[in-house]
Length: 232
Image (cartoon, rainbow, N blue to C red; front, side, top):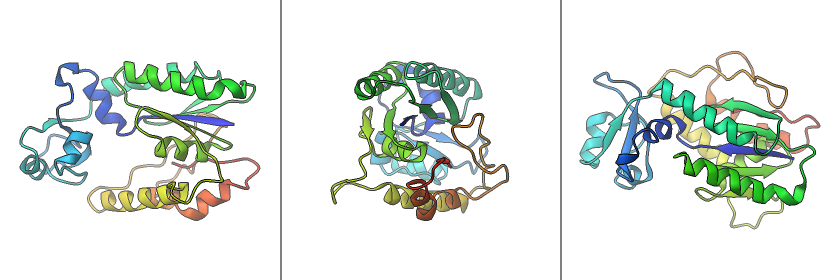
């Protein structure tokens, strides 16, 4: 079994946790201070007001006049990453810094009866550190990632392959990711792929469109693969 701790909009929340006085005010992260900088991520309050990734700052402010605008802070991301990994180590000594805001954990040898309570405690710990998080538990790293992505805010979820018809499937999440990636790629250059730091997961070391990693065929292949590969 594997677990994934996931912090959505990691760069944004890494910055916001350094400014607790902002409380729940609507906020967005821009990809720089240039005139035509684009929104990379927005809080739930900002999204409710109509702010979406890909907008320019003027467009975002036109929809939410009280919007707090921030830019990425590498130092804040380094601190948040350290916090995420520290919490990951409370679940198992075998963890991987898979991607910004994603920690993959190999649960081999961990008592299965303790998995759910431990995952819940890990999420609670991250929330207390100012990092809204979710956790997923599943037979493979990729499925654990999608379990984390479909978990309710600040909660954990175990992925059962015999889902009810009303539950959003991992393949549906993959489709959402592909559409989101394509929308961002129209305005930004493709980001380099992530190189794994351990044997838990692996990806190509060439630059690749993020959407291609999230195809249903890639996801479905994980269900039968003897040695699962996580691509994010």
